Length: 342
Image (cartoon, rainbow, N blue to C red; front, top):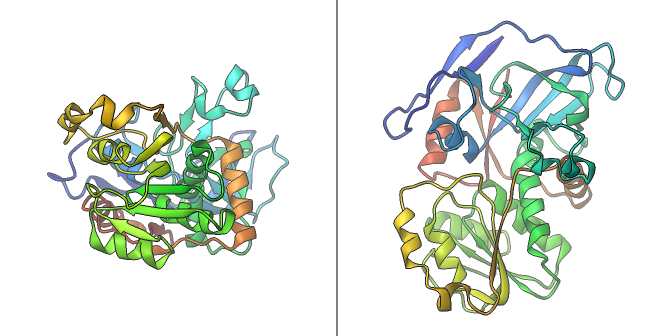
């Protein structure tokens, strides 16, 4: 099979082609696994974190990609959930132990033995992959392959982030950063909370214009103050500056939810500007989002199908994965980037 493989960690600023197109043996499913022929795979900022070493794969080479839509090509001897030809999705959660207190509570995202697709196991930047059938999801027919792919991570993690805000109808929500995940959160909010006002912070004027197209009542630069205080803010950026700037816009008792697996070091000194009375006093709080659970993925897919929530996508061929990653790194974003696997 063809695959785009990461052989070594590097900076995308220095190496614009970190992935190499190679031929690998077709994977063989285990007795509880399914073999999936990949049709589409979303491109996520987490892949940048892997390539540049902020969340490095435990071993190299590895096939990246964790927003995967494909068809079942073969089933293992002890599988029963899927048949050959079924269309399935695979997200960031590749497996968990199933026995710890977190797994038993349905919070596999916190499992100490959490395994990630495209990091701890080969992912979807390839023609085929295998996964345990318990960690695959049926894709609703209303979505094309490319539309469904971003829902499996950008959508699911956005869904979890929104749930963790504790947002109530009639409150004000802020979104700082406006890429694949945030634009899906805005679509969700407009359907679920008709009286919530959404304020967007983004450094790119095109992202701010896009946010207003989708229904944000205000969009400003990262350092601007919102015209109203915000009950909750979701941060989807890879850096620290938006976190500190967002805190000054929180209402008393407000919550900032950080939707990022890692933060880059480029502006770490910005944390020195954190001022307790300005940014944290009066019971403001910060909560991180860690991975996603199977519940997040399955619930969001159903919700997105019910509400007709579809992402804006930009398609690339498998061989163009490096180009898509560089565009993501340089913030050339409108919606989500997706690899189409022929």
